[in-house]
Length: 538
Image (tube, rainbow, N blue to C red; front, side, top):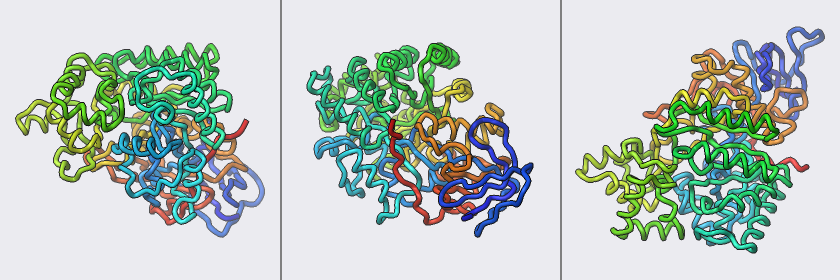
């Protein structure tokens, strides 16, 4: 055997009780599991790891990641590797970098600079989904990438490519083009379709259009992953809308970062769960993901009303520079509640700037818009408008609008999985980018007892692997891929905080991908074992 982990507590990803065993790895797979109650010789290997005091589990699957360029930028990618993440699902929120043409690539790069940087350090040699996945496969000088990655076709990018940034219904020809683009992406290996229905231009799609695209996804056995139309005012109606249209299309549904935010939704998670339970009981195929924190994270430009974003980044900047139009935007945001802010009037004291593209604006980072405005003796909108224009729509934000009781209630649900929604850009990113998975294990399982350790691991491994239809991942089973994590149940914890968000976790000394040590003795190795994980064909 290549490697044996001796006398380790196996938490196998199924949610069943753990057991003690020797686990032998060979050729990138789990070759033998010898329980302590089994008779016969113990497996030997060239490399033996003492598992005493440690738990061995499948590698964690980040169901909602924004590492689309980070995987090609940073070979170490320690933010995820050190957490025990062995697979990330990218292409989220309806906006990513394939499929594109030259025009669309330039537009999407500008739109999501706050998520992934402007991409000036990336060779965008791909245009199709398949070419992007091939690029991930070959990674750094052909070696690969830090962790595995699966891809969702981004509906907003598809719409951008088929009809631009117009706020209108698609023509029959345009809808046919979008259906074709989604089908091609799935044929080339994408696992499903994502939407960002509070982001332009994806939010301009009506339910009929989305249903037609979901019919394509269903035909290929993929799933639809929407960031739906509201997490604030009308949140329950927005969830119900997604359940209804996917059931009509016969498509599996995975609800992205399924939270209930803003003051009007405090304590209302049970209403969401009742809605999902009713649909599940009647045969719907639904899963969801969350991160174990209360604040959200997005871009400042996403807070604008959708009409202000029609036409793309240059049109947005032109509107912001026009005093009369900017005043209309302010009124909608502060008085009426913009659709970009989930129909809730924006509270600037909940909006903390977490990153900017222009170093000259670094003084705004780590401060709320209200605090920066007060310091300058101006109204918050004046500060926010200046930031958007000077940073060319680049600022990212933390939005402090969540509720702990909702977070805990949702993570207990049987169809729940873990997703970091981690944005790695900015001087002060959300700590979830570096801490989501050890925080689940340390804070919510060990300290708070919201989930048992076995159940928590199942939420982070076996259940997401089932949603992704990966037959040989997500469980500790003989013959399965050796994507594994060894952690100390007594000490595992997130190191990242809101004040120091880039601190790596503790208590995760070993992470393996394809049987190779990505983390060994608590340190990142130079192994690049990650590859693109393509859709399992029907």
